[in-house]
Length: 164
Image 1 (cartoon, rainbow, N blue to C red):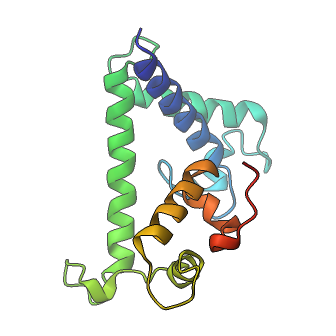
Image 2: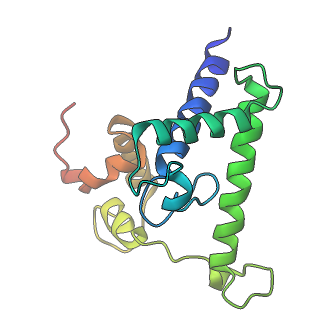
């Protein structure tokens, strides 16, 4: 089996497991699966959730994704489940952002970038209000060495103390 295919199956399976666990969180499952109430998860009605009840929900979620019923998720089934979950997330996000309910999202309705100003200021190491090609290349190299966009947290421009 190719490594990429194997990784996709592992990630999809992990998503299904997380979905089962997330459904037990207060206030609903968050971004995964159907919203189940405490009462729906408490299948024996004793007012407490047991590990067995949560595992049963996990198994039910897995079986739902296993559309051919063979007891295993194929890459196609995992991708289909991921697409379904992605579509549900996109629909909820769209509904939240469509402030005027016109079934369209305008540029004004897009969320404003929360940290764009900070990132710009970090990249503008000479403080002149613009980013030169050199500053851009420095920031890009820094991000690559320090974990992508999360590497920008330690970025301080040309005066940055890099570990190597």
